[in-house]
Length: 486
Ligand SMILES: [Zn+2]
Ligand SMILES: [Zn+2]
Ligand SMILES: [Zn+2]
Ligand SMILES: [Zn+2]
Ligand SMILES: [Zn+2]
Ligand SMILES: [Zn+2]
Image 1 (cartoon, helix red, strand yellow):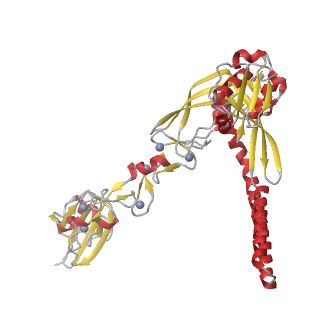
Image 2 (spheres, protein in one colour; image 1 turned 30 degrees about the horizontal axis):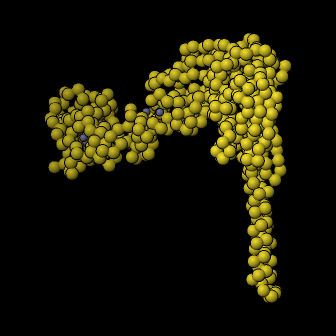
Image 3 (cartoon, helix red, strand yellow; image 1 turned 180 degrees about the vertical axis):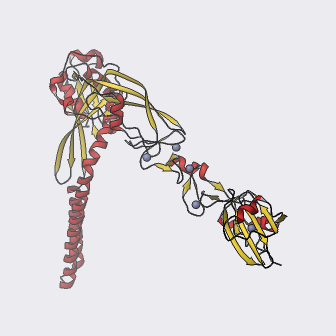
């Protein structure tokens, strides 16, 4: 989409070279004496690989040796101006960082901040967006010549008054790479403008096509209804005419965007390079960021999962950066992973489908499925972790255990192995302190497991069941006849 022809043509004009377009599409260039040593007497230049091949011309496209030499030469001339921007009272790097980026689950610390005068390249493009109408706009792309980071081309950079034509100290800038990066940035920037135009054009085309088709359908139907002579011949003519008009409409509303590089200049801008460490208790990640003294905008890190740039930066527990759309959090704690790692780090509960980190994921030791803390059950008798399918309540103490520990009779292992204790046992006193509890029962049986104590006092008629928790509090009490059966 971006062509270098216009840039090269104006460069040739600026240096006083002769340029003659050839029928093949190539350009015959006669270099001026000032350039003969570097470029030779004459060169045939092609801007299209097919033309280059067909006419043995030298290819001049982004990345080609020839364009590289032309841009390098242009950068040393008045044609490619060098300018300088100064800034005072720059805020602290921490403040700039805080104003630009959000780190919801990590703390950023600036390990190093280096400030220096850095060469940038400003590319000015003229973009034409063509459908049934033509829109022209000028787009400027500013980028750090060393890091190729794109910065906002603020108005101040576009002023001619900045120019200091004599200054030259940008020789190490990789111009071809910068130009390639600028073209990429340009395409992203104009995409926003292009979309509505493209949508409007295709809607208009659809309406137009419907109108054309309807007109000819109706005409053909009328033709047969009127039974004119040789309707088939006339129909053919109609159809051909319709096809021609459809083609015409397609061309009229076709969308086309072209961009031409108008000029390029170097601007020296005070720039701060930040070496940043992003950390939380689970991981850390180092990032390099930069901001210029005019925009005070840091570049945005790119998401390691979807590769789009983001101003909301999450730190994955495996050390990745994730954007707002690609972060995944454990349903039970603040453990964050990126969407790439989520599949390996987070597990889904078989019962409620919530995703949880390894700390909050449990495996059913019988069924081998994974469950969240809300749906796993630790058996108080055997310690086994089981899911809802393998949990069973005891008919006597009514507490839940794993199915292995609750017999078909309905009693848990604790309730099946109650042993006689003296009435003076501390648990008896604890269970019967409250008003209204039987104080004079003499026969007691007791059992306990990891979580509960089961006590049954046997009176002459009634039996009293107490289930105590680890703190000795009664969590269940029942009075009945033959609680223990037989
Ligand atoms: Zn993302
Ligand atoms: Zn968790
Ligand atoms: Zn990750
Ligand atoms: Zn669950
Ligand atoms: Zn058990
Ligand atoms: Zn029980």
